[in-house]
Length: 220
Image (cartoon, rainbow, N blue to C red):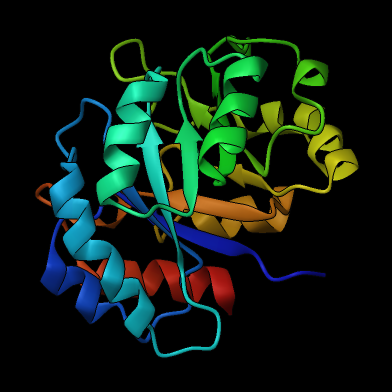
């Protein structure tokens, strides 16, 4: 069985990123959408080169998190910050995802937001066939789309397990994860990857001890 991937999202600080260099993290997320973790293209351009210093053969990939961006916005940011992956949290259509890949040569992750009643907003998955490089399930947030720090009912994962497998792409789970609950998720639902942000923070700032504990629980 392939090792579960780890994405640490919402990085803003050079020193925190440098303190993570020995950890087996697979993706580092930079938030460009409206959020208290939002950064600019210039800030991201200063952070992304640190990923090349990672002390392991496979360096983490940089992920830019967006909600309903325009092609022009993406173009402006990518000219300054050479992101590996564009993660789309809004109502971006399959056509838009294809255009992003074609125009910028990046991977595209699409996020589906799970509501409390289990309903998911968005297009039918079959419409994205052959388009995505990763699929995320996150807890629906009416203001930001995701990043609420709340878990959804993990039983809702089951109907969405088969499609990514058929597409040969990872299914990544986000929403309210932290070092104390990620073990239950892995044991009971075996996602391909996990994505954490507020669950490794203390008083709104990334906490290296919590990041380390989270990564160790996933990778052990």
